[in-house]
Image 1 (tube, one colour):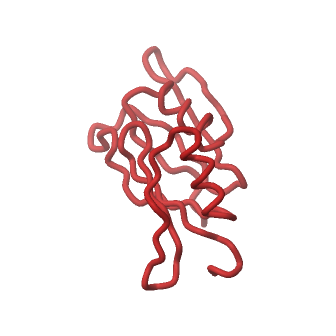
Image 2: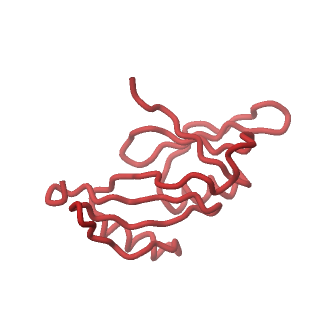
Length: 123
């Protein structure tokens, strides 16, 4: 068993899709109509792993309610710098007491994302 899709609640699927694709480098897996008023927007992170779907239809998941969505990146310092250059507000790199380096950011709706260093020296 493995996690295949994580639902990320957003207000506007088009704006959220632009953030994830243009700023974070995700690729569009699908963007298809799902009934008269909804779309199935599924995105894949660079490097693979579980996909996300940008949802608007779960009343118990308001936009911005996902926190701690962790992505491992190969070079945290480089990725953070690139995101800041693209206008993304990314927190400073933190060296945690448990030995993990990370930086945090929010998507356009306030969903919390953690970028975790995945370089060999941090593993």
